[in-house]
Length: 114
Length: 118
Image 1 (cartoon, chains in turn yellow, brown):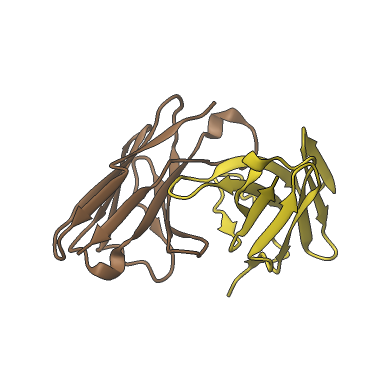
Image 2 (tube, chains in turn brown, red):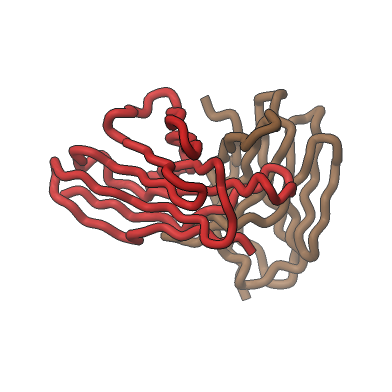
């Protein structure tokens, strides 16, 4: 049962354009969402997060949007740079007041072309 | 920033042997660490939650007697794959949760360990 889904396994975007990565979830108990970037043979690197009480969070070139009613979140990267090429995972958790377990999506491979 | 290290980064072993993987939080204390496994082109799957000074909590389907976890200090958790078999070959990643940071549920991941069982 895949509770967090990234339906696009890959995405190719031209340098300077906007990259939009999508993520859907099924568990309405999730209340905290994160995006991670991962290179091959390396651990994920935290990018940006959003609490369920917000619908947008922005950090530099990265913006995460959350639509709770649709159980959908997206990561916008603008402008996209070649160094952004990596696999992006969205993750979700239930804030239980202690360290919460993360449920990861299947990842989207982003390729930023020149 | 928060740094998590793993050792070794890569290990090749014979079937039937045991392999120990270390996960260290280098600049913060972590009462909770997590162990994940990632098969090629798949998502990270949580295996267990490691709590300092207590027994680990395993996810459904993960054999606790096969994947031994010890969290003896606030900066070190170890995962031992006992009697490893080729199907245990995978990329093992740990993460640490610096609860004192107050930044929400942000876990910091180690670089991973590639295990190959021949």
